[in-house]
Image 1 (cartoon, rainbow, N blue to C red):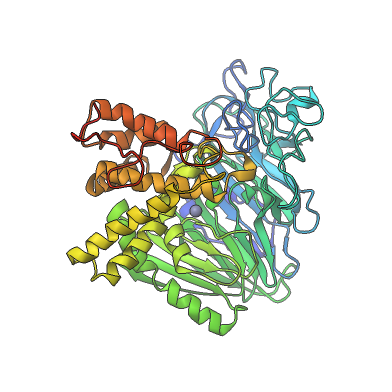
Image 2: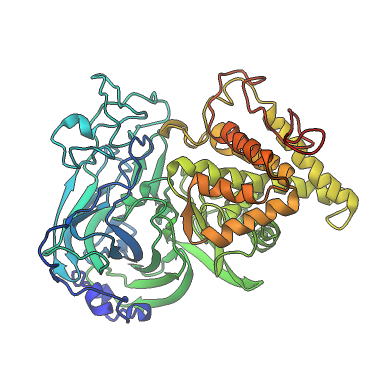
Length: 603
Ligand SMILES: [Zn+2]
């Protein structure tokens, strides 16, 4: 399909590009313009994947099709931080209904005129044929008047449902507010109009249900960051020598159009042409690097980097950084490990970073003991220079910001490769599920240090120290007071989605309790069953809890108690203070009332 999919405005840099994995047509490809028998039953795809009433990024995701594969084809001038003519993406999707139109997420411009994006769509084709396109505001999910509801109140931002705001809007929000900074009050933009970030594409004829189709979007301009609901930024960060990408939860759409929802997990290829001498670091494995001579766009010559990610990648885990990076790799235990560092990081710091990066194969083997085999063919680390708001578990290529890496965070982000990456959150409310497991990865690291200090994993003293450390870490979290328990992990607002108490430490401690309830071996078995069943896909809270319930050693009334345990730890907002205002089911050997009765049952 290379010829047709790559019908991107001719760029000298793209000439001669060979993409062998695109040579074959996708199975079941539908000829362009094939009309269904009449257009009865055909309709526009939904402009969201969020459930009705959602107040966490209800504007994201797009219905009516499944995202199968994405070719990212950047043509990027690093000096100008600009996507040049010829820049674009090719999305391969499968229709799940007969589609008269469908949408993508793309934030071309933002209120952040300094570091935000400033991009323009030049053309859109569907199966190679020109298609119409326009940008519209999102509508609140489930609006009975449809996604083009003429009522302006149907298109308003808010942290909460209903919108409220100055006009006391009783409707649910259509998007999460984009706060300019972290000192702005959470509700300050409630009731304001959502930006028109839905790219609606109308093909020349309806696309039949079940048909596989390709969408090519050509765009140019400056990528940027997204002002998030908590006032931080994420997306494409400007570096002195290019761009650095960390995007959770939604800012991939600030550098490329996509189906921006964590359960949308296409596979990826990257074929980026950049200034000669620069390096592109993306997900998956490096396929080839091709040098090109000077051209009009690149007077100093250019280079094209081809990466292939054969595993499904969630929307916020797409990595594509460009700059003056060192890049090496080695194969350990059958996994290829990449190491990339920006060469503008001082040499002494790079050496310190490298010592920690070199631990990744060992950390991966350690975490495999709990989670089962590493799910991907490759793993890696990229360290960039911008002071991004956070480090992020980009799939198979963990992104560290600010020029440094630390061991504890590497245990956390590497644990995400199983949790969040291979098994993705089904929606943003499930962020706690994968952050809690990544926090458990940090708890395991502390336990491992205690184990090593006491004699190592092969000694009974070491093993006892490992278990005692986990108990201590649980008890520390369980002793939290003040506002620690006031937000249910499964029901945050955008402003506290990434706050330590509800999304990290509370679910992290819950997993220690769960491990005490099930016993370590059965807990690991549950984790590995989750990997086998949901790997490459995403998971909902009931699905996730059901697997742990299967591994309870004592059934009957204990099933009911486990259900209460999940409800207390994940779904309950308590009054402030701690004490009686916190979960009252814990686990054997832990502070609090425990789980089983004195007879070992739940009667
Ligand atoms: Zn995390």
